[in-house]
Length: 263
Image (cartoon, rainbow, N blue to C red; front, side, top):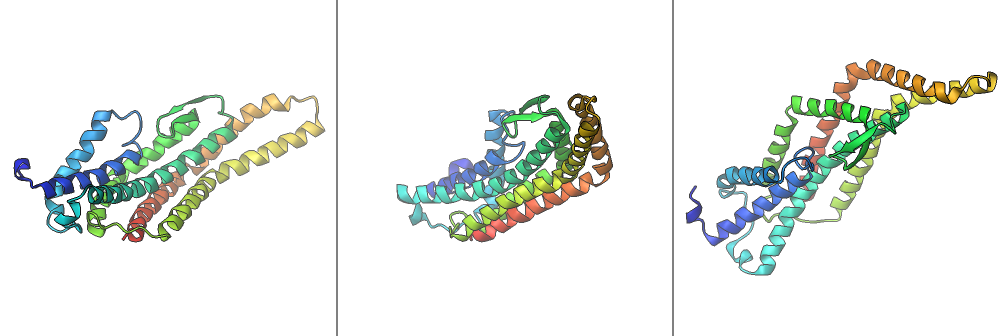
């Protein structure tokens, strides 16, 4: 592929494809985080688009040369490509945010609210124990080749939605709202065991405080909640990988479904 033999139409198509891939990587977890160097964020989408473009030219195009003769036509195609990339990246980001939200709630229940650090993914402070659990979840994601699946999903998007072929309907807004509800449901399911056990422990401390007022329940409960929290984490560790893996599988299914709503 010789860059100097590209026609004006092919250069515009390459730019449109680059916009879709760049918007996708912009919102992707750990690919688009603030701690990733800007050079990597630029070169990675460019390299992937450069590898895909010879294949895209053979059939993944739904625009004609005359559609890109005007500035308005170029803006419309670029807007469609950016929307496809942002929609797929947003779905992936929401599921990772669901994990972060659920693990942050677990950390708060254990009493690690004050022991927090800045998290580059959520761009906010998270309890240290929550960040440790999130690291384990990220390692599981990499262990099941999730990063390869994300790239495969982007390649598949060009087959389902050719360049300039996105169509926007009211159904896409309902799909995004349904995915947002799924985010909170995932967070609730992940944090439910910890929340239930800590609630029972605090209920027991309330009964003890009424029965034996001499005991400083406030001070004792801090240590007990931490111990109970680690005990629950230890008990749920065998099914942790299965549950997190199921969340990632659901994420890939949702990313595929959003393409159907844009065709």
